[in-house]
Amino acid sequence: MTLTFALLLGGCSLGPDYKSPALEVPAAYKEMPAQAQTPLAWPSEEWWRGFASPDLNGLVAETLRGNFDIKAAVARVQQADAQVRISGSPLLPAVDATGKDSWARSFQRAGGRSGYVEARSVSLAPSISYELDFWGRLRATQESAEASALFSRYDQQTVVLTAVTSVASTWFQALALQDRIDIARRNLADAEQVLGAITARQQVGTANLLDVSQQAALVAGLRAQIPGLQSQLAQQMNGLGILTGRPPEAITLRPGTLNTLALPEVAAGLPSDLLARRPDIAAAEAALVAANANIKVARADFFPQVTLTGSAGWLSLGLNSLFGPGSFFASAAASATQTIFDNGLKQGQFELAKGHYDELLAAYRKAVVQGFTDVDNAVAAYRLATEQEALERVAVATAQQAADIARAQLLAGTIDIVTALQAQTTLFTDLDTLAQVRLSRFQALLSLYKALGGGWSRSDVVPPASTIYHGVI
Image 1 (cartoon, rainbow, N blue to C red):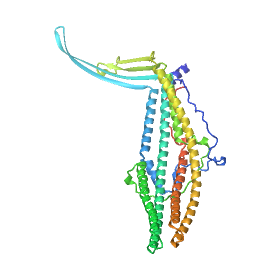
Image 2 (cartoon, rainbow, N blue to C red; image 1 turned 180 degrees about the vertical axis):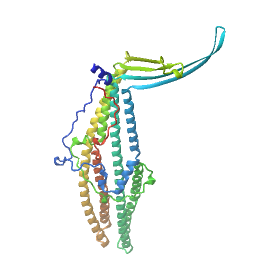
Image 3 (cartoon, rainbow, N blue to C red; image 1 turned 90 degrees about the vertical axis):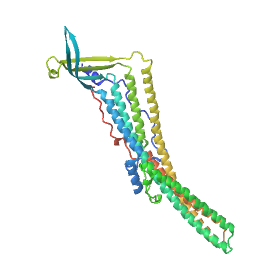
Image 4 (cartoon, rainbow, N blue to C red; image 1 turned 120 degrees about the horizontal axis):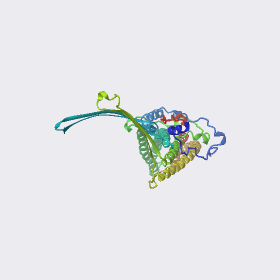
């Protein structure tokens, strides 16, 4: 008897119960040596502060407050929480109350007599209805809603991580472009100085017009590069507006240089740790849990739906006698609904739910593999960019020495302009390349922080409040 009562109240699930899918998790990252697998420093919650840029800290703060994508993600969380409450409401009885006061007046003639007759009735009738969740359909619907609410929370964190890394990337690009503009201006000034010296020599007959023209062509080329770099810089600064949720005119920061920023080191740790550190992976699994619950719903739809209804109240011909003797009435009913023939509708819905689960299972496994791939790519990119920057600094130092020697010999008249031009061009190219390589190093480190989840963890997310009625089972 107790078990029967438990089944009536709590229902039973037809399954399938969710189980975490089997995953192929590597023991170590391909791009990291075995001794470096344990995290030296996992990203902190405010990892961007490690770059030691007050301007970046301010931009991130504005992004967290005003970014439109983040606000939309927060609204989606609110909608998902509301859906949890909506889905949980059928698990408890619904209670209504109906009150009615009616009056009628009609003209009647009977037995040679005629006149107006008035009739009045007053009623008050509360009612209750409750669907017995025999097969767990309502409970599974609630489970799906709760998993979807978790998905919205994880998705919000993915949006936050994307927005923060985007604003950091944009700021780094602006700083690198400012560095390149400064380099281009210095190079232009150096080339103009050489041009002035060659022009002076041409006036006294120790240089010819071709020498002047060749150096003038180099000066013109350097001068023409600057507007293009300034245009790119303006676009990056304007891009900060949409990321922070403000018009471009409100962005008043002036970019400085990448050379003063820190490069906060971080280690990737073990691949198994990544599963709880990436919000996109968590979101993919939450969607899978919701799809699994929807299979339960579709399976339960094959079975009868049983509903209990009851009502009680008072009915009287006058308000003053509504609660008097003889005015009370009550009724109760039980009903069951079973589909006999639906032309394959329920079977199609069941197969659709299973197909959707299989699709999301593939998406979840892809998200996991993509996470490992992102970390490997970022680790390799950062390591190689670090090596390239060191090599490029050597190239710049060598080119600087060659350019200084060539300039001195050119002014002394011991080499021709072609040799000097080659030395200048090599130096100017290496200086610009060094600025771009340093940006690549910052971008690779930023990608690594993003690939590691940016300091996020599943334990940081508070699950939605459940409204499930827990029965005896």
